[in-house]
Image 1 (cartoon, rainbow, N blue to C red):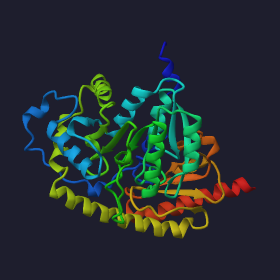
Image 2 (spheres, rainbow, N blue to C red):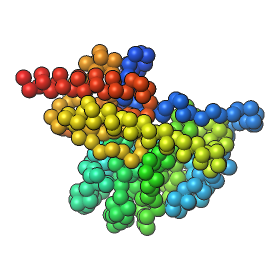
Image 3 (cartoon, helix red, strand yellow):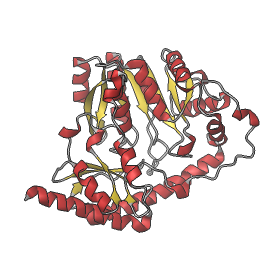
Length: 388
C-alpha cells in the first residue's frame, strides 16, 4: 500500500492510549488533562438560531471574533477582529502552523519539556526539533541565545503560562527577554495559552506577543479548559503577514469550525456569568491542587521533587532516583492507576528519564490518596529492582 512518506513518522498518542486503558471505572487516573466533570457548566441550547445549522464563514462567527479580539486587546495583544481565526480547538492551530512552516528537516525551537501533542504534529511534518531547557521562571536565556545564533528556526513554540507539562509560569523579566531575543533574530513566535485563566494566586503576565516589536507571531487559546472541551472551539490571532495564509489552510482543512460550538462560546465569553463561573472554577481547582499537594507530601516526599503549581492542571515530578517512567505503566495499570510518563514530552525521550506528569483536576478526591499511594508503591518497587 503506497502511503505518503510522512506516514512513516506518524506516532500514536501515548496519552490517548493511556486514557483508553484508563476507561475502566476502577482505574484512578492522573493521566489526562481532563477538566472536572462536576464543574462543566450547564449550557442552554433552546435559544440557538436555526441558521447555526448552515455553513458558515471560514474565519468564524463575526460576533465571536470581535469578542475574542477585545479580550486579547485587554491582555495587551495588538489585534483587530480581522486577525482572529476560530479553529477546531487550539490543537488545530498547531496543525495549521506546521503546514505553514514545516518541510522535512525544517528546524524549529521548543521548550524542553513541551506539549506532547505539539511534538506529535511537528515531528509528523518532519521538523528537526531543537530545544531550550526550562528553568523555574522560563527558558534558559543563555542557551536560547546560543540556539538562535547557531540556527535560524522557522519558529519557536512556547507555553509561557502554566506550561504543559511543567506548570512553569514565565516571569515578566523572562517574557521581556524572550521577546527581545526573538526580535533581534527575527524569529516567529507561536504562543500557546490554554491555561491562562486557571490561575490560583491571582497572578498574571501579559503575553509575549504583546511585547514583540518586529517578529511575526501566532497567539492561540481555547475554551476547552474553561468551558466545554467537547465544543472543540479554539482561536488563533496572528500578525497581519501570517493571517491570510492560515485562513487558506483552515479553508482547505475543514471549511470552518462548527457553528454550534461557536454560538455556545459566544454566549459566555466576556459575560458576567462567565467571570463568576471562572472565579468558582479557580477556587475549585485550587482546592484540588492543595489536596493533591498534601497527598504527594505523604506518599512522594522521599521519591521525587516538584514545585507547587500556581495554575493549570498538572504537577510535574522529577524522581530523585531516575528511571524510564514508561516502564512503570504496565505495573501501574495492573494496580488500577494511570499516569503520564514524562519522557514523551521531550523530542529525545530516551535521554530524559525520570519525570511524571500528574493531573490533579479530574481525580475523585475520595480516591486521591489511595491512587497516589499505589503509584508510589509501583515506583518504589521499580527502583528497588533497578538497584538490585
